[in-house]
Image 1 (cartoon, rainbow, N blue to C red):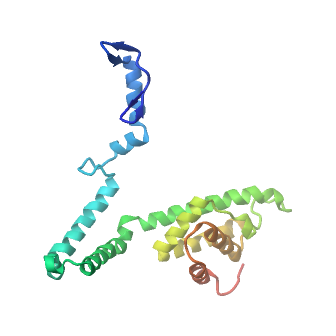
Image 2 (image 1 turned 90 degrees about the vertical axis):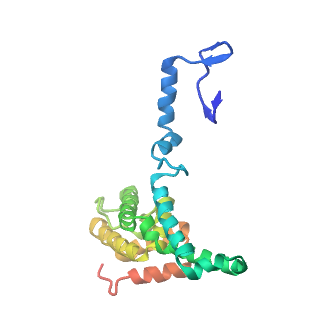
Image 3 (image 1 turned 30 degrees about the vertical axis):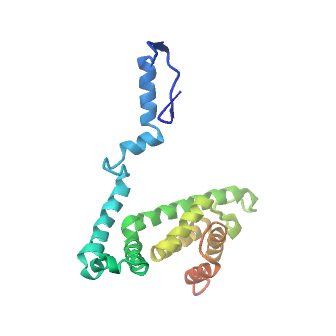
Length: 228
């Protein structure tokens, strides 16, 4: 049986044409529903008119204020709402200004610093698994073996997130990528060029940066002198 799209247990009895469940069964269903994807979402919602999550409601409220200022508090924009000024060109221009507000506030929507540290941890975790996987192939048998670039793999999700971080927060990502290089060198004796090659390969497979953009970015990361 389904109730509002949710599957529930078959009733234990039907009395007077109505379904009945034992109290224990009903309690188990309620608890399971509370712990479901929808239940957690409802529990953590902003409890307002749009039934948004807490974070989404904060974003909505922020840009409601920004858009109200752009559309009404600025006389040069407000006059465009007069009917004779309300044409496609005017609306497109206003839409562009509102979109700029969102783009320019991206670092206030996404916690760039904390995201970068999380990406760093995810990349190093993937690298560690790769090194461990290939460790048996190395002659030395040492766990801290020199890692060739093709031994340093990223899962698609991590590569996509790193790519997004570079595209959206290039400065922060630059610092994080440099930290990854240093960690790979001190932990696994991986040459900087190998680490960069591994990252570049992962982004070429799963990222959205163009080839030219990748070349530009990684050229900035290459050391002036090969000290590895």
